[in-house]
Image (tube, rainbow, N blue to C red; front, side, top):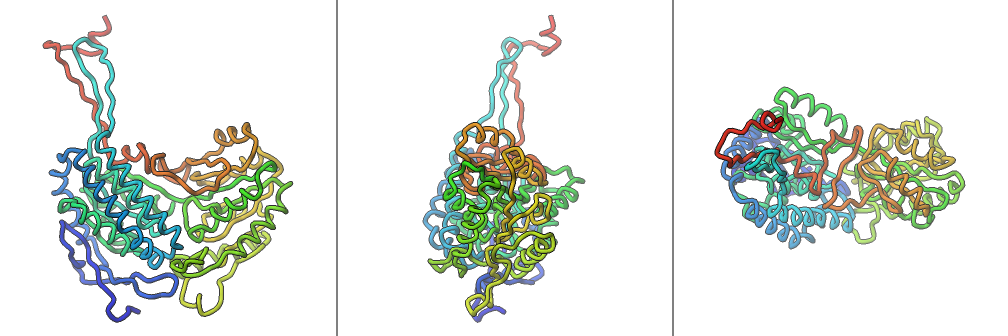
Amino acid sequence: MALLGTKSFQNYIGGEWVDAASGETFESVNPANGDTIGIFPRSSSQDVDRAVAAAKAAYEEWRLVPAPKRGELLFRFAQLLADAKDELTELMSREMGKVLAEAGGDVQEAIDMSFYMAGEGRRLVGHTTPSELRDKFNMSVRMPIGVIGVITPWNFPIAIPSWKIAPALICGNTIVFKPATDTPRLGERFVELLDEAGVPKGVVNVVHGGGGEVGDALVRHPDVPVITLTGSRETGVEVMKRAAENLKHIHLELGGKNAIIVMDDADLDLAVEGIVWSAFGTSGQRCTAASRVIVHERLYDALASRVVAAAEGLRLGAGWEEDTDVGPLINRRAVEKVHSYTEIGRDEGAELLTGGETPTGNAFDRGAFYRPTVFGRVEPGMRIAQEEIFGPTTALIPVAGFEEAVRAANGVKYGLSSSIYTRDVNGAFRAMRDLDTGITYINAGTIGAEVHLPFGGTKDTGNGHREAGQAALDVFTEWKSIYVDYSGKLQKAQIDTAE
């Protein structure tokens, strides 16, 4: 129920703030207490058509703006994000539920990414190579593609838009952005700051609404050649199917079922810290969350007791309260899903060591809370060890040695992040080689990526692309090879060189 005086927000299309064509709206609510954050336009394909038309028109001028000048705009935007960090942190704790420290880290990622990509305006490096013929020059350069459809999730509502929008803009593309319906105010604020930074009209557009209306219309639109999506595997498969007819470029960052391996020579205290942070940070709502802990059987009992004690010592509460360790899940549906996996784990015969329930009391009655949950003696093939739960649940899997640990870690359909705790340098390097994931940590948890390295995974975690670092530029550019012949005569390449 909307509170009296709740603010209404609009779409941003062609440099103007406008209502949805239908006039329909939806509410964003605080997952800790159910309060209304704001009212937003429930858009349709008609609104997407308007936004794409604006972005397509703006592209013709934006692609010609020198990349260093595009970079200057991103530098201004990054500074505006830094100036607004406290405000955005507080807003995120209320709209998404993150504890303040994690919300601030989310914003900092966007600051870092925007500064990093702004610097690419003076690089956007191509290649020069020697020609096989005399008096001929060869080079390859990056070219922008056009309108980019950006579809982002609620769990990193400032960071992930920056991972997609900043590199797309520096490369000379224009944007139609659909924020998650659980965090529309944060998406809106992101675009407000881009507007304040001076983004030209039509270069960035935001259209609020559900995936079935706005997202599908973006994916199917013939004038949107690139879709970048972070979401579930199931959504990613549907996006690829629906985009196939137009041969769109599809960039997918999907699920994870990440494992921390703890060998018998590990620093146990350090490993427990990494497990608790990776499993229960953001209430387990990270694609890189450690939902599996593969532990050498000689350390199993000691590690299990410490992880359980640490999980039981975490304080649940509203994200904006300074002493909160674990905030709410994003909504009640998420609580139901997480609890369904608790029941699955019990039915499979796993030992429920702690958690597995919603907390009681006035502080939790209106929110979407779930206690940190640890299952013990889990077998690698159990569903709780195979399927993405996306909540504060982790499974302890005992193994006899390194080879078995690696087999268990790799024995899932996802391949995003992995970790190993060991003092054995040889084992660490074997893990770096053998763990089939896009990210591997040594003596650290499964979370903590930095913006200047590629982010993404193998297998069903995506479709081969990466976010962040130089690799992100490949999503938002096409390579063009250029040959300059200054010989003054016709040269026939391989025909002339065959002599």
